[in-house]
Length: 293
Ligand code: PAF
Image (cartoon, rainbow, N blue to C red; front, side, top):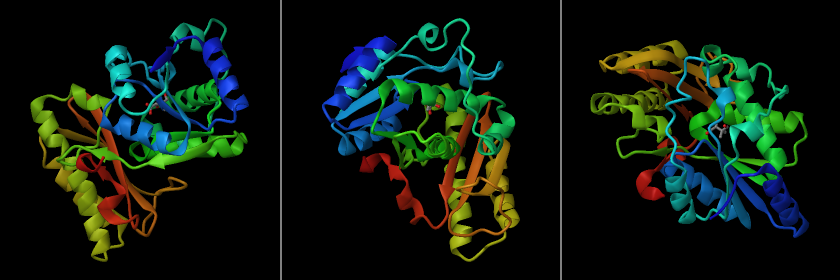
């Protein structure tokens, strides 16, 4: 892959690609890539002529006591993985260029940013929507691919693109899972062996919720109670939230239905993991398992 670190150079390339009428597919990431990211890259490659992947650990989406400093980074490894996955350009800007002195602008998506993870990570989604808006402006993609694992992030970006009339198509790609069901995440690398074993309970809890729904249970409180009990049976797990929400508005629902998202955030030691499933979305085939990609 071609690595570009300067904003001016990326803009020049983007301008030239547009002028040539090429479809640019974009995958924004924070690096330390895994199979989940690579599946997003492949999705972008299938739908475009040129694929740009950004690697930028965005400081503004981390809270003061969060893991910005210890977030895993390895650009050489990322570059090697991207070469094999259909990526053409790796854009890796510096924080100094992305947020120079006197930087002052924030993109805030109301309501959606306050729910679920937003209630526990104040300012997080402002950091995400702002950096994604900046990256869209620099890369000028035809389409951009986001993972369903970060469903709230995807919903916020879709809202932002609609509200600000941004000329980019947002594509959601299914969650990629380890063989035991754990959703792939760069943060899985923090888990101790014991925490890693316990973390597989998240997918089991979500699937338990889905099964109860498919068996006819519609009472969200009952389903969430069962999911919580299952998660709490693992010694390392500490629940932040387990919720049933409308997957479009992210509002809590009392009655489960097609399109309800079961979503959770759970700590294993100091590592916070999130995951979700959408009910009535074709069962577990809505998730891509590692063996399928
Ligand atoms: O999902 C991520 O990795 C980040 O939130 C994103 C979209 C790259 C913005 O920094």
